[in-house]
Amino acid sequence: MLSINTNLMAMNTARNLSEHYNQLGVSTQRLSTGLRINNAADDAAGLAIRELMRGEIASLNQGVRNSNDAISLIQTADGALQVINRKLIRMKELATQAATGTITTDQRLIIDSEYQAMAAEITRIANTTQFNSIHLLNGNLTGAGLVVHFGSGNIAGQDNYNIAIANSTASALGIGNLSAPDAGHNVSTQATAQASIGAVEGAILAKDHIRANLGALQNRLAGTVTNLQIQAENTRAAESRISDADVATEMTAFVRNQILSQTATAMLAQANALPRMAMQLIAG
Image (cartoon, rainbow, N blue to C red; front, side, top):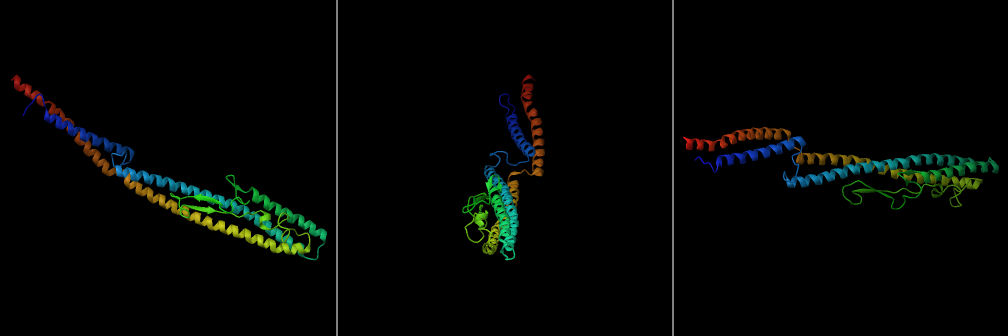
């Protein structure tokens, strides 16, 4: 049927052209962005899952950074405790020297002056050791300590660790003239020097206990970093499978829609010519 007022063939061809052109636009967008999902209309459920995964990935990556910062904090504290350890060893040596009866009182007083200097240096180190302005060894982190958050949730023991570090000043370790006036107070007499030997040994053990706890936590944090990185990698892979475009598939669709769009354009030109055929009949 030839009609002038209504060209159904042209209307149908135009509709098909519009559909193919829209699909060509989708393929072009996916190929240019590398994403299968560029807006909610592409896949509403997939978009929601992807955004949740992206949030999870960002949280996991930040958890890695938080854990590494905590490892750096622990290493800072442990480094200071290594220096304190050397001071304690020297103090035990001095106490042992002052404990013998073959030296005079004046000589013990000289030894005690160095003993007290070592104790003062231990206290200075404990009071000044910091990480990001956080004091580590002066008792600031005793008790509740410092919470290191690394997980994507907020469950204690699963998403965070607690770093507690005992006071490492000389008086807290029970040595030096600021400690209680008993064993470890000074080495100015043979009796106090003999008592100080045991006190310094106790201080060394207390220091070793602090370092052991820090070392164990550092190892846990190192394992946590590895685990978080694996989680982030696997979540990223899952997000990619949901969100990323399959280039081979999209290129095939692009070529198909490109050919169909070109064909529909050509057919639309032919359909638009039909009313002229009707005019020719009238004119003839």
